[in-house]
Structure formats: structure tokens, C-alpha cells
Image: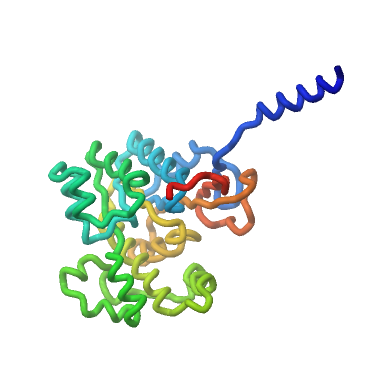
Length: 282
């Protein structure tokens, strides 16, 4: 009888456990509430939401953040995932001139657009929210990587240069995140590889600043590496607007999400720590 009682107690305890998908931390690794994140972001001019492109928690919380902020304040959206030369097609969709099928055929959308980004674009359309295609056309970044660095862009036409941050751009190869790229790529690392990353960051920053509006919060979606440790895009934003009130959010994955690993301390103002066993969108 005693053994059955013990087993029943263990069973009930196990059944009462909750399966947490993520934990939210501040920059120092302290657990914080979603309410705290909402308060901070609603008072900011600019919010960077750093995602893992295939992480469903990132995409779900992006949507929830945009929806909730829209109820409290005016927002604009922008995203790495749509390139600047597709702004006209994106605008046509937002204004109802073309449908989703047309947008898919006319713009270079990411393979996971339908599942991960279309809901937010549709949300912007339904609510009359500006959505900015901030990224440099990928072929131009590839030119920087393969054809000699920033100078490869000198041959672009006037129209093509309108889809890129004004040249020449400032560049600091010694920024820790850029140095990390060289470390990660090891034998494949080149100065041009880091410049290709920088031209993306500079271009996204340029279109973000161009589209900032008073009394609006601009929410930008990007891969976490582009805004982690307040570098990347934000470094370029600060060159233009050093006084800007910006909040960064990052996504990390851990086996144990009860506390934040040391390597992630300071990564962003808010850090979404996701169970590494979470399913992927692709």
C-alpha cells in the first residue's frame, strides 16, 4: 500500500509539471514578464526583434508584440526579409492593388514567407500600417562578397544605388560581432565577407531611419545576429540618430531555459530563451 501511495504521488507530481516553451530574460539574465517587455517597447521609438528565421516562437511573439503594440500606440513595421527593390510590389499589396499570389510572383519572397511573415504583412494591410522593405537586394551583397568589397557597388546605376545605403558607408571591421563572423567562418573568412554583412546592416539602418515617424514605434524584424549586443544595424542607426530610444530583443536556444547561459548575458535588452527541442518552421 505504501509503495502504491509513493508511486501515485510521483505520478501526480509529474503530471502537474508544465512544459515551458520559452523564458523571457532581461539583459542581465533576470526573468521578466511579457508585461515588462510591452511597457518598455511601447515607450520606444525603435524596436529590433532579433529572430531565428526558423523558430516558431520568434514568429509567434513577433505577431503578438505587433498586435499588442498596435492597440496601445501607432506602429510601423520593417523587415530584413523583404528587399528594398521590392518596396513597390509590397506597397501594391498593402494598398490592395495586387493579391497575395501576385506578390509571390512579383517579389522575391523567402521560402518561409507564407508561414512566418505573411501573417504580419496581412496584419499591416488590414490595419493600414506602413511596412518597409529594408534589406539590400541580395545580389548586391553578393557582389560585395565576391567582387572586391564595397567598391563593387560603384558600378550600380542611380536607380540601383537608391536601394542601398548612401555610398561610401562607414565601416569598422573590429566590431566584436564582425570579428565573430571571421572566427566562425575560419578558413572561409575574408574581409569581403564582413563587408557584405556590413552593407546589409547599413542599408537596413538607412531605410529604418528614413521611415521613422514621430509618435510611432518602428518595429524591425531581423535575424538576431544583425542587432545582438547593440551592434550591426543599431550601430549604423546610431551614426545617424545617436540619441534614439531603441530596444533590442533577441532569440536564443538552450537545453535548460530556467536560467540564461552566461554567453547570452547582455545580448539584448530582452532575450527570449527557447527550448532547443522546439520544432522548426523549415
